Length: 211
Image 1 (tube, rainbow, N blue to C red):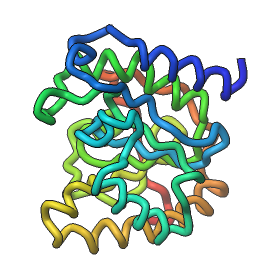
Image 2 (image 1 turned 90 degrees about the vertical axis):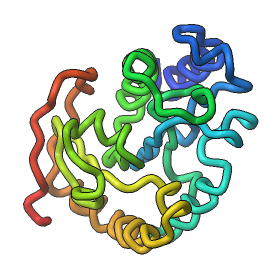
Image 3 (image 1 turned 60 degrees about the horizontal axis):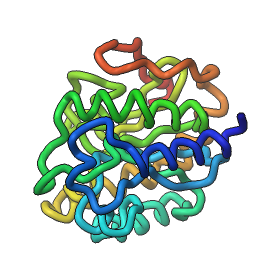
């Protein structure tokens, strides 16, 4: 199967998923969207109110800010693949539970990563960061690229953090401005991506030599 076929299959599976209790309260599942050739993949936490209504990731106020941040990196939404750790909105926007994260990532997110094979994964917020850099603190390592099993991971604050705490916006803007530099660097330094490591297994990590 091609990347297009796999991503379309995952989209259909997500839209009809009943693997965990979150499906009972959703309006629409949010599989993620973007071109199968995207070199950059952004991973948020989960759908919010607007995303649940439209079935698309980052379409509310956080989505507008994300569009602005991408523009700082010389990118548009159409250039990147945007997904989430979980595909259905938790009740009252609560944090996703460990079993929900494990179910959704194993069934869908890691398959999307493998199909896309992006050069850079930008994690937005602590839940997506913890998939690749468990035990770290986003406030400490945001914007610092790491190689995890041959893939460049760039942890960043979630756009919602800048909406709720405006002092975080300059940090996010500075991190996004570095994305073109990181893309250029990974082409020179990063080895071929390895298979995605399931949750609860801590992958080896290293920091790029240029940073």
